[in-house]
Image (cartoon, rainbow, N blue to C red):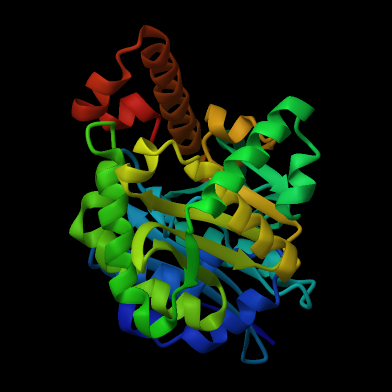
Amino acid sequence: MTTASLCRDPARFGALAREWDELRRRGASATTFQSHAWLDSWWRSYGTPGRLRVVLVRERGRLVAAAPLMLRHRPLPTLAALGGGITDYCDVLLDDECPGAPAALAEAMRRASRGAVIDLREVRPGAAAERVYDVWHGARRRLPDSVCLELPGVSMDVLLERLPSASAKRTRQKLRKIDKMGIKEHEVLPSEAAGAVGTLLRLHAMQWEGRGVTPEHLRPRFRAHLERTVEHLVESGDALLTEYRVDDEPLASDILLSSGGLVCGYLYGAHPRLRAQRVDITTMLLRHAAAHADVTGGGTLSLLRGAEPHKRRWQAESAVNQRLLMARREAAPALALRSAQIAGRALAARAVRRSGAGELLRRFLPGVATGVN
């Protein structure tokens, strides 16, 4: 017997941790961003009281599907995925051992949506949400979202084989310089995580001072979210927090998120002293991430959103996230209007980038400048 319910109570959602993560591990496409620790902590930092809408599907009492959603009223009534702008991959959860889970979750989401449009951003290719979209009865639309860059999850030696010989030679020289400096890697223990997050964010702020830091990364709510969630994720093996030390002083730090065959480099910070000494910080961090992916069997090393030149130089391949819009048939006009709004924002964002006015507009109209929302 299959039953569906809608969870609106944050305390009840918080109590789902064990069965939520059991379900996540039965879904091959789920990422660490779908872990209960990440989502529950995100809601505590960013959620609006009264807006939680988590769709749950059980078969004979066992949780087989879930959609972590929240209600937004503007610009139109929308059910959006928990995680917001700090989450690179959003998704639903499906039990791969339950063939009927996609259809059951689609029907439960349809009932929960009422007149709202379901707007799932940053859906990774192959994500569980695509299976729900495929069986959706009603209006739907698929739009491109952010570009992520990916590398194979192999050691640095193998990655260097992908580069032109001259570039590979220069990179090996940079790695030898790093080794001669005596930089030591320290993998942070769960008991050290909260303090280490503070160190990471301090280094991140120093690194980007005067160079356009992401404002959210400096806010107390972001710090509180990371402090809560990283300790749990390090303990469960879903995250690796590393400090790069010289004489026991952390001069750089980064967070890797691991799930199934995917390793993601989420956030890093580095002391300006390293840049002044012409240390290739990206190469140092990538060597560590590649080794972790190689050892743990992570088939893909994701550099997450953004196609910056320092990522492109590694011959990384593009993987375009999708934005999935779904609604009841009677809400088709609302879905069409939402699609038009998204297209308009994307057009405005492209115009801003071409004009070179991005930094000015990011300060005053961040949604237009970046295409967010």
